[in-house]
Amino acid sequence: MIPLIWTLSAHTRYYLRRYMPTNRLLDAIRRRRNLRWGIPAMLLAVPYLLIVSICTNALDQGAPGWLHLVVLWSVWNAMKLTIMGPISLVLLVRARIREAGARRRDRTRETPSWTTRQEEPTAYVAAR
Image 1: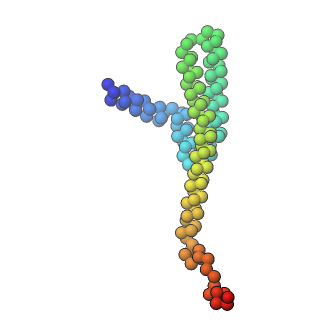
Image 2: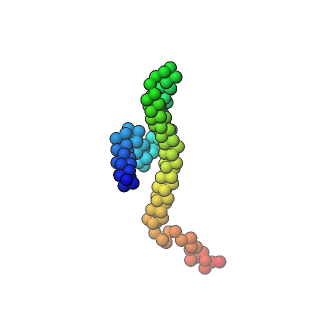
Image 3: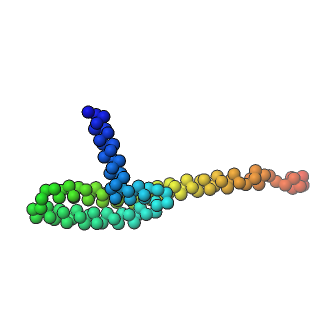
């Protein structure tokens, strides 16, 4: 029974990861060249929150109970998009620090070893 549940959950996760629009968007934002789009992607949470507002108002006026699932889905997607903004900023800062370190290491490897030593000229040493 456990292997069946495990397999079912793995396939469900794969399907949701591959075909749901917000998951695809978040996967695209997590790539290095798209990290800068995390903050603008937070604005996409606004339509989801609008859906939540409309559905909760409809539920208060006696709409069918299945709208609770739509509210849950909308809140979940709004939270995912809202949280991705600060996370993308942290990932972007971390990537830039890593890239700056790599550039610094490349610069020190390219310079010859005799230019990095701080030795005094021999004529100056002899004149002391």
